[in-house]
Image 1 (cartoon, rainbow, N blue to C red):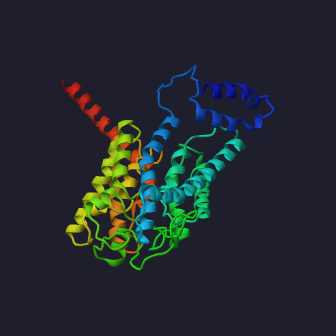
Image 2 (image 1 turned 60 degrees about the vertical axis):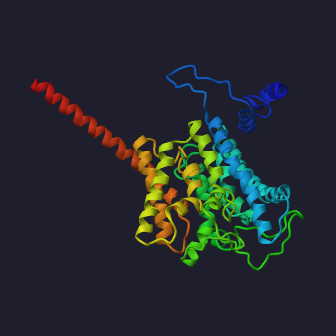
Image 3 (image 1 turned 90 degrees about the vertical axis):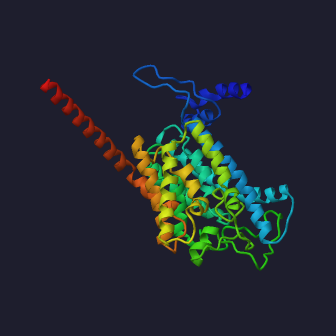
Length: 400
C-alpha cells in the first residue's frame, strides 16, 4: 500500500490546479479517497470531529450486505439445480450462482458510478460515496432472471432522477435502490413477478442444465399465498416449507431477501457499529407483526404474523432500507412513528391488495415522503411542551 500511496502522491500534481489533467480532478480525487482516508481537517469554525465518515459508513453497510450477497449466490444455484432435479456439490452450486449474480452487481456499479463520475466532472464537485450501498442493494432486491439491460436502465433512472436531480448524496428524498426497484416493477411488471423470474433454469457459461422438471414452480412462497388465497407455502418442487426453511432462506425470492439468518447477521453488524438506528428497525418489525396478527385474528389473511415477517422482503427492507439515515426522520420519536407505519402499511398492502403480495417497497417509499413531516410535528410538539413547562414554572415562581 505504501508503494501505491507514493505513486498517487507522484501523479497528484497533474490533477491539481494548473496540471495537464486538471479536468479530471474529480475522478482522481474519488479514486484516491476510495483507497485512502483523506488527511484534510477543518482549520476554522466549529466542527464535530469523529472517526466515522461517509466512506466508512458506506463500507460498513456493504460489509453487512455481504452475507446476503453470498447466500443469494448459493441460493440461486440451489434453486436452479432443485428445479431441474439434480444434486451437485456445494462449489458447483455456488459457482453457478456466482456467475449468475455477478453480472447484475457489475452492471449496477458500472452504470451508477459512471453517472456519478460524469456528474461530478460536469459540476466540478467531489465524487461522493453514496452509491457504494445503492449499487449493492439494487441487484439484491431484483429477481435473478432480470435482464441486465433492465438493471442498467433502472439504475440510471434512479441515480439521475431520484438522487442527482435533488443534489446528490444526502439530499435525496426517496431510497435510491427502491426507486430502481419501483421503476422495474411498474415499467416491466412481467419481469418482476410471476413463476418464471425468481428461479433461473438456463445454463450459465456452460454451467447447469436448462432442462426443467414438471413439478417446477418459480413463484415465491409469499406469491403462492397471494395468488392462491390459501397458505400453500412450498418450495420450488412443491415440498412444504417450515419456519426453519423460511428463516434459513433456501426458497425462491429476490437475490438478497430470502435468508433471514444473513439479514440478522447484517443487522447485528449495523447495530454494533451504530450505523443503523435500532428504533427504526424495531418499530418496523413491531408494526408489521402487530398488524399481521390483527388481520390474522380477523380472518383477513391466511398466513400467520410470523410468516409475514419471514416471507418476502419484509426483513430485508426493515434492516437495510428503512434505516437509511438520509430518507428517514432525524428525531428519535419520529423514528418510532416512521418505522411502525412502514410495517403497518406493508402488511396492509399485502393483505388488502390480492394482486400485489409484497408491500415493503411501496410502504418504505410512501413513508420516505412523510419523513420530513414527521420530524416537523415531533419538533413542534417538543417546542410546545417546553413552552408550557416554562410558562408553568413562571406561574409557580410568580405565586411564590
